[in-house]
Amino acid sequence: MNEKVRVLGEQVLSNNWGLVKKTTIELKRRNGEWQRQERETYDRGDGAGVLLYNRAQRTVILTRQFRFPVFAHGEPGWLIEVVAGKLDGDHPVTTAKKEAEEESGYRVHDVELVMSAYMSPGSVTEKLSLFLAEYDADSKVSAGGGLEDEGEDIEVLELGIDAALDMIASGEIADAKTIMLLQHVRLKRIL
Image 1 (cartoon, one colour):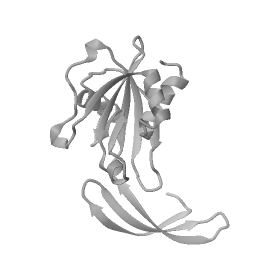
Image 2 (cartoon, helix red, strand yellow):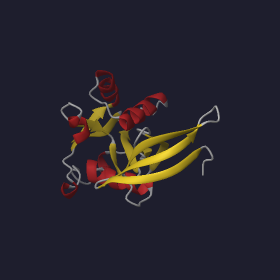
Image 3 (tube, helix red, strand yellow):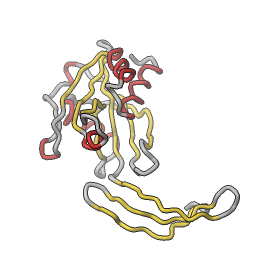
Image 4 (cartoon, one colour):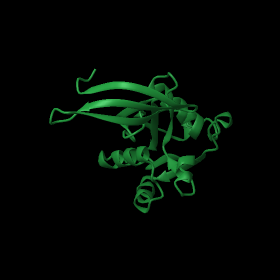
């Protein structure tokens, strides 16, 4: 474990869609003193996201769906994002492929890991594995849209890479995983 952190106790605050805990710790500061702190964490499991791209057409597949926390923050609630989902015990590659087909309607075979990152480490334990996968017209196997029994009602968007990057600058794309993957594609000159 970590010799600079002592866990003194945990309290489950909620265990519905995710697990919310309050944990009391002692943290050894740089000056050698121990400081008692309370922290809340939200654990909903790890996830995977994948940006589908078409090199020849210079396009990407993104989705638009309602996100209640965004709505609760005072915005309309609709976010444009890469395809993503919870691991639910699966390997990140398996999840990336499954979610690509469920949400976008595209079946992808080769996915490339770009990075794994924490999106909001101040309180959320989730770590996302982020991938790229190429698609073409033959990859389309359904309309996509997500799973109704999971509450998904997803709009599939095919955008040119320049338009997608402009949407970051305008604030139309405000999702961290999506911004990271789009910028990766530009920085690495993939599109």
